[in-house]
Image 1 (cartoon, rainbow, N blue to C red):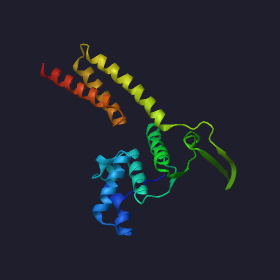
Image 2 (cartoon, helix red, strand yellow):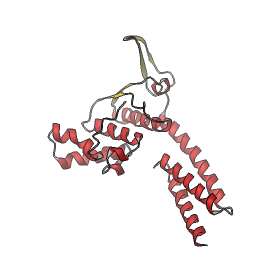
Image 3 (cartoon, rainbow, N blue to C red):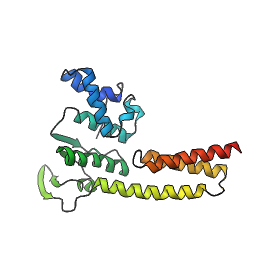
Image 4 (cartoon, rainbow, N blue to C red):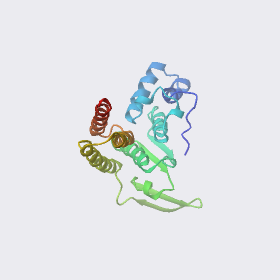
Length: 212
């Protein structure tokens, strides 16, 4: 449930600490591998930041990269979505499903959330220290598909914002639209090119309004 990142070390240092200090790998080799993993989990641009400068979802991604740097065949995840909101939880589950699908890594995940368990292929239920159920998941949820649906919804909202910009929008309304587009862009960073395009359009419109 806790990310267990060293608060006084950067993201890159947190991920490379094990390979360098424990396994004795060269720093350059460890950093190259760490940067590749950070890019893969979507936080490559945060490598030089401290954990306190990251969101909860970003810290969880760093923790996943740290767990992957030694190329494990099994990944143990204890309540990985316990401190995350719904959207970020889906993104984290997408990472786990992708690791399982593309790299064959077995993910053993502990959760009290039934909806999160539905992303697995098999669930084992415990009560009072005993196994009370062990079953295959009949209808497995796909985080990738759910994220795609969310992006489609997002793009529809952004198109509506674009339409509003073509109207005679006052300065205050324009500022509100810009802030909303920025909020959406930050929420779904790197999910769609449309986000950057609309945000840029909003900024341009604001500059034009300010120059009048």
